Structures are given as C-alpha cells and as structure tokens.
Length: 378
Ligand SMILES: *[C@@H]1O[C@H](CO)[C@@H](O)[C@H](O)[C@H]1NC(C)=O
Ligand SMILES: *[C@@H]1O[C@H](CO)[C@@H](O)[C@H](O)[C@H]1NC(C)=O
Image (cartoon, rainbow, N blue to C red):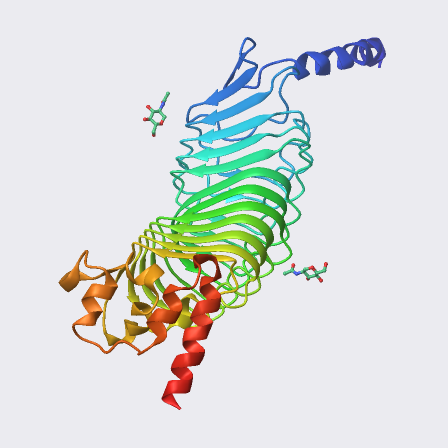
C-alpha cells in the first residue's frame, strides 16, 4: 500500500513527459533525416507503418520493407505529410478502403516496384482531404484490376498514372472523381463500359501501350475534356457508339495504333467535339465513310495505312484524305487514290464536287457523299 501511494504521483508526473518524447522519437526501423525532412523506413524487419512520426517531417519513404497492407486510416496521426513513397515492397498486396483518409497536405503518393500490389480496391483512395493538387503514381507495379469506385470522391488530383499489366478497368473504376488534370494509363487489356460515370473536370486522358476493344459508351459522361488520346495500342474494335456520351471535348485522337475495325458511327454521338484526329494508325476495316463520321468542327484522317479493298472507294472521292492515307502491304506508301483507281470504280461525279469543298467542313461533305451514294444505289 505504502509503495503504491509513493509511486502514483511519480507516474502521473512522468507519463506526459514519456509520451512527448515518444512523439519526437524516430520510429523503430526508420531513419529521420532532418535536413531533407524525410523519414525513411527501410529493410525487411519493418513490418508495419508507424503510428506517428516526429513533427517537422514532410516525406515518408517505405523501402524494401515486409509491409503487407496499408490499413484503413493509417495516416490519421500523420496527416501533415506531403509525400508518401512505397518502393520495392515485395509483400505489399492490399490497400484497404480509406487508407489515406484525412491527409490534408498530400501532394505525392507513389508506388514503385511493389510486385504484389495487383488490385486497387473499392474506396482505397477515398477520403483524402488534399488541399493541393495530388499526384498518385504506380510504376513497375503490376496493377491488374481497378475495382468500381476505387477513387470515389477523390478531388483535386493533379495526375493519376497507372502502368498496369493485363489491367482490367471495371465499370465505374474511375467514377465519381472531382477534378483530375492528367490521367495516364498503360497495360490495359479490358475496358468495361462507363468507367468515368459521375466524374467531372478531367483535363487530359491518355491511354497507351494497351490492347483492348472500345465497347459502346466506354467514355460516356465525360465532358469538358481537352484531350482524349489513345496511342501505341492494339484496338481490336471500336464499337458503334464507342465514343458516345462524351460532350464538349476539344480533341479525340487515335495515334499510331493497330486498329481492327472502326464501326460505323463510332464517333457519331459526341456532342460539341472540336477535332477528331486519326493519325498514323494501321487500320484493317474502315468500310464506310460513316466510320469516321462525327460532328467535329474539324476532322483529320492522315497517314494511316489501310487494308485497301473496293470497300474504301468512297475515300477515293475525298481528296483531303485519299491522298494522305496509304494502302497496306501490297501498296505500301501509295496513296489510296492512286491504288484504288486501278481496281475499283470511282463513284462518278462526286469527285469534282468534293474537291471544291473546304477542309473544315469535311464531316459535312462526308455526309453529302453518303447522301449521294445512297441515292445512286436507289
Ligand atoms: C532493395 O530492393 C531492391 C530490389 O529488390 C534491391 O535491388 C536493393 O538492393 C535493395 N536495397 C537495399 C538497401 O537493400
Ligand atoms: C452518380 O451520381 C448519382 C447522383 O448523385 C448517384 O445516384 C449514382 O449512384 C451515381 N452513380 C455511380 C455509378 O456512382
């Protein structure tokens, strides 16, 4: 009894002191570099994220650790961090929902070489309260699936870059995001319809080094986007209405892709499109002028290599594109006009009319050819 009575006041005095010193101690297994304001936690003995770090540090680096998961609310007591990096964490496989909840000053969240991190789960990037533009980057991290609403209610994202491997973008995978300036995705093998539902304020979308089909309404509900660019990819088919549901898009560009079929009316229902660019692709099937029909103010179809058959004879009537696109293997680098002439009949009389038409009204003139061709058939 007497001993306890003597110790109790001592404990009461020393407890607050103890916790203050704990707060300012560098976490076990980590190095706190005051000059760079970085906390670096390194090596296989590190199995958890720290609960807190001393004040005054902006950057947390987790390198070569044995961490397996980033739990919900992990950064509750580290909400002032500006950057968090996960590098070479070979066991990291799970980011739980709301993992980064409440981080206010976060500007960079980077995962590089995390070989077991293959899924981005529902709501895992939700609840971040970032005031500044945030960059979320995945590099050499073989993301295979982005679940619906993985970024639900994410806001003010400066850049999101996902370099996946056999990556499937589920329906709603990039839905409900409020402002994303630069989106870059590679390694895609599947895109489901409606990946962007309820998302607003995307500046540019860049899909590259991928292999997929564009389903109907793939990009629907996106609006006020400057650039939607698909590049260096194999696109087996673009479905009718593949680009429908987009509105007020400055440029849709397909560049240097291997394209199977562009269906009729693939671009038809884009409202308020500035420019449609189809440049330097190899295209197997483009049998009707309707395949590139859109309401774009300007259409550029240039330097594509096509499988030339008589199905392309409509193109021969449009000087602006038949002279600057080429025929495939047999007629490589011969313009479509000079190649088709020898084999297929050119629709009579349309040629003169079209060549007097200015380039900007190209889509109108396609429509006219169509009307003419249609009337001739009847
Ligand atoms: C961290 O892991 C990478 C890749 O596994 C390895 O090349 C590097 O040497 C490791 N670094 C340290 C400091 O152990
Ligand atoms: C889109 O927003 C509406 C209205 O807030 C909501 O009812 C709907 O569930 C949302 N759709 C998705 C896929 O989240």
